[in-house]
Image (cartoon, rainbow, N blue to C red; front, side):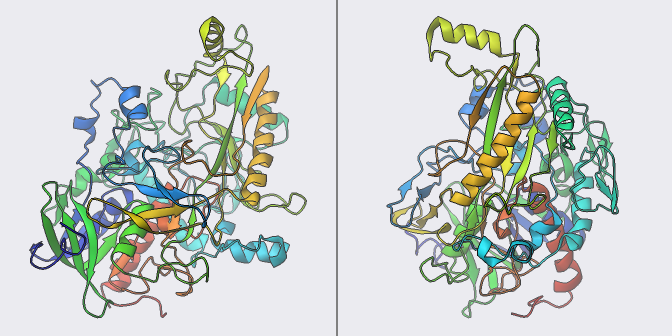
Length: 602
């Protein structure tokens, strides 16, 4: 079956029409399905991967398996199912990625919300007006000439109620730093004002985190506990779903949570959603095209292929594209919706402003006769952080770069396969290596976060369709063109050195610093925070969706997720992704449904 035959009227069987079809049932798909079924609409969600359920897939009786989940990537898309091609420069030949390294595309109901560490960060107010803010403070000439950062078309104040709503859905644990404009002791003094405190108090901090906080304060910083979707206490969310306190098992990132302690679609939304008579979920089914009418301006539904290879057409009045960010851009290109981005001319919108994250680490090795950190005791997003060097919280003028990030000691759990760390100069094998592993396991600070920096957008970092390689449906593979620019390399070296100063002040005998440098390495894990490609904004010439995440080209199509980010800030993206989903759902419920059509004039 070739690319064109797959969705011909003869090949695809037509299903009864729905009010709404949602592509992808992760965080954003679940939020939107809950909101629109509450509105009385008949909703179907189509998910490429398998159904995943907390009590059956991750029962408390199951021992967590690092080899199965961390090494063999049980919860993720397999490259033989679908992959991408990769290159650093536009003049290079891109080649298919055969093994995931720098990032891990999720697969299955719950999406990345199943395996994530549950960091719950709000972006800074200045992040949403980044181009305007930096230009006004430093002048346009201070920015690199090829940097294509943009304002979002939405402000922090507009998004704040939706940040709050997602935090309370998840039961987020934390300490407020800015409560209605008043700076609060013990919280992040740099955060934007919040309308109320976190729903649950911050998690109690283990020894290494407490030591980091003490050292940071002595150096003049203001450390605070990382906001966490791993709960500090029992909690019942607004949907009536109950969650339990984290048990610090150390198996969070890469793993599903068996204790109902980690916020995920499975623990916060799906048990309510699946009981609704106007909601249907279809798993193991891959959407291959968003269908439009002859004008190309109105979506008529989607075509998908089930696990047996049979093609189906699902008609719908409203289409919500809420897949992983790369897949959002890919499906827009395969469906012919929006003008593909061309780096040579700077024109086009789909594939534009593709970004990742700039991360690095500092491992601190302490005297094992004096320090015991018990690193196997961990939680996905427990730790102490500082925000003095995030966003534009400091004067960038003397340093020659823009952007920043948070740094922190975030101990997610020292799982044995990936945590055999040894000091610099240790032999690579043999008795010397074994002794070093034994002596350093309990006394090494290995941050789960370390440095978590921004990644700003550039003209020649983008997504498009590969001219050579195709998938199993004969569709062109997505091609990634991405590299580390000098601005991000400077930013990362600056933050890494600042972080190392704190680790040294904790009492480390030796340090091992790892900087993020060019070329971008597709084999070394960084984060799964791939953003952009279908970005939001106020100008249809430079954005694919408007401020409500509605397609400029097809008004009954909304595209959710981190693909909407014009660039990536120095934070984990999930809380902003969830807040944007509530923002878009509110616009659909209160504006679009009463008067279908464009919500913003192009």
